[in-house]
Amino acid sequence: MTAPAAMSGAMKLLRLIARTRRWLIVAGLAAVVVITLQRGVFSNTHTTFPIFRQSYHHLVTGSDLYAMYPAEQGNAPADRFKYSPTAALLYGPFAIVPSAFGLLLWNLLNATALFLAFTVLLRRRAATLAMVLTLPFLVHSLQSSSSNGLVAALIIFAFVAIDRGSRWGAATLIALGTLIKLFPIAALTFALFSPKRWKFVVAFAVVFAALLATPLLVTPLHTLLSQYDSWRTMVLNDEVDLTFGLSVMRGIRVYLGVDMPNWPLQAIGTALLVLPLALHRERWHEANFRRLFLSSVLVFCVVFNHQAEHQSFVIAAAGMGSWYVTSARTVQHTVMLVLALVGIETLPFVLIWMSMQADLIWWPPQRVRKAVPSGEPDPFMVGAPFAAIRQSRAEALP
Image 1 (cartoon, rainbow, N blue to C red):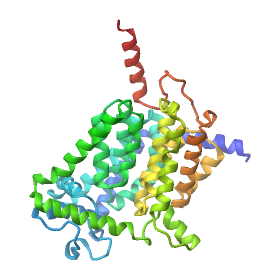
Image 2 (cartoon, rainbow, N blue to C red):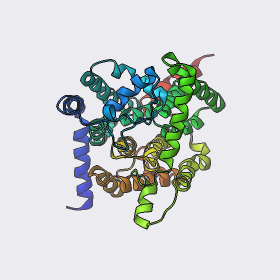
Image 3 (cartoon, rainbow, N blue to C red):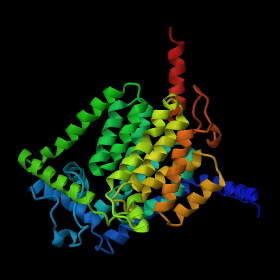
Image 4 (cartoon, rainbow, N blue to C red):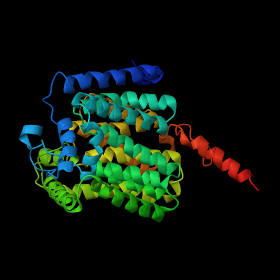
């Protein structure tokens, strides 16, 4: 079979998959139920969700959130709570109900949030296909009871909120993501697309401070300050852990046999991430450019995260999915996609991210599947037609 024939067959298969939205929803719900039974009823050996549940009770009772609790959470070095005190408070609704029911609600929240995020970001068929490509990674994340599906959704929702002019909504979503896992703070780069950037910075600072203080609802100030001090110590200890994680930094240390800290490569990666924004300010108004940058941020948050685990890659997969369904369907893109889907995690996602950055830096319009002329509705972004309607109505007013 020739390459063009193979690509044509692949396109037909992708179009067929994209029509299976209702079955995708059924499959997602079934996965949530099965995984909940697997982790919460038939087996209680997995420690992640118990750690989340216990963090709320430790916060309320004033116990150190970041201490070891072998009888409750396991005795492995990883069996410790690593999120903020605010995150511990947010786990309250899942901690005050029976464990299996709480796990069902938690898994349902992660799966539903990510599905809805694709729905508000992309048109129906593109959203469905993106979710199909992300589903294997979401299932892995759910099996680990992780928060990564929710974090990916918060980043996407924040991007959409900024695109729709909701400054306070975007600030709240980014702050929530950051207080669950620190790396969603990279989504602050979306603020550059906002016409009133300094007002967004102020909104984020206000919301972030308010969320930092929300545990005061259940714990006194001196105890909360002690919790934040323990959290700082936890974060600093994680930063110097050079043997854990599936990041590009650890890959270089392992394969090249060099001993180096995380921050130099993270600094280089951050500079490369924002370089297209510095080079192409005139492109910020283009929906394709902004959407590709969103995909890049999602992948960046994983491959340059020194604590990235297998279940973290659902965040990168969300970026990969939105990138693939809205970019040129080249052989190179498909090969990288297939390598990522078969479970070769870090390297394919690094290659995908480099491809995204190359397109953002050099920004050749022919590499984008449907370049949208300025002023026209974007065929992929759900919010764009409504924005165009509002603009046309505003121009019609005297």
